[in-house]
Image (cartoon, rainbow, N blue to C red; front, top):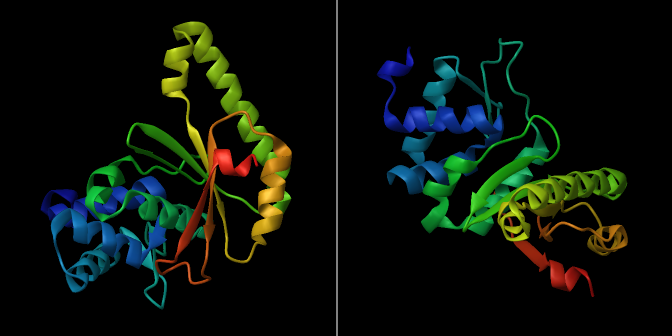
Amino acid sequence: MSYETFSEPQLYALDILQRVGCMSTQQMDYILGHRFSITTGQSFNVMHSLVSYFYAAMTDDDRYITYGSKDDKFRSQLDMNTVMALQVAIDIIGGSNIAEVADTFYKPYAGTHLRFSFEGTSFEVYVARLENASYIRFLDEKGKDIYEADKKAAGEKRAQELACKYLFVIPHEVNNKEALKMIQGIRLFMPHMMAFIEGPNYFERQDVKYMDQSDIAK
């Protein structure tokens, strides 16, 4: 089946998968439901149609969907970091804005696990564990280099407008106090915040607690 005969929800679902690589089916259902006002059953029909036409693959339990068919050696792999990053992004954005903001979801080839824009802020989402301190420091230095280059080229105000905000997602299995201590010890230059996922079932919506930069610094 070619793109020309796809419905709008099918095209939209495929576009999201191409940009992020994978997600939970509940996340896709949530986005499609708000975008097109369709039921969960209709959302799953959309996802299963992409699978039947070899544009996507779903896990045997129907909890996750990835871009590309199971027989495609170039297909996207299930990345739980991306799923967790999407979960927090969706939680921040909320239902009333998700249909518009989902258009900005993008998984970079390297660096962070997800990028999206919301209310004038460009977020770089990275799922952080205790062994990732050196890489987080690298991300901060990279962001600082870009900021300094923008400041030199366009002025400090414009550089501040262009600067991204790092959102560090802490998985349920990571000790929150230790994760906070790790971030505090790095003394980050770039704007940042933390999100702590409260539950272990990442295919479902979980409670998330947030900590802003001012609270992290205390």
